[in-house]
Length: 205
Image (cartoon, rainbow, N blue to C red; front, side, top):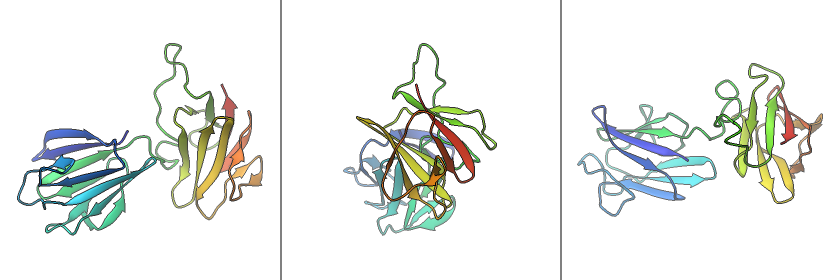
């Protein structure tokens, strides 16, 4: 679940879990996240959550909203982004958002042990590239895999099984050597996905 860690002068003053589709941030007391500081506008910014993605939008604030030192109007937040509002720094943590292969390959998941059996009944095994040998259990309804800007796909758990669909990218992922089309494709045990030059195998648990 996405989380914000709010600090001022290096001292953490609050942690906020993002649970709503829309979370407002500002000085006025009716905001979801209240920052009582004159450098912060009454209605400063809004965070909008859509699936695993969180966008931040500046609400025409007086002093602006900065991401990693750069003023933004609206931007998709990435794990470990530093948001600056007035003198406050807000660290955005979202380990389960889609990530590039170089960093986390697919997603970070808890280590699966006998006491914590896999939830969801399927996994992705990486069989080529730097992360070869890694296995990721599909614990969420929708798991995003890939490399933003190159090729991103989603694997969705449905009542009758799992489907894979293209999310973005000029280079289409392939399923058993066939490029994915516009429609989601059913996944079967042992199917081979190739995405941004990395091969993965879908396995039922």
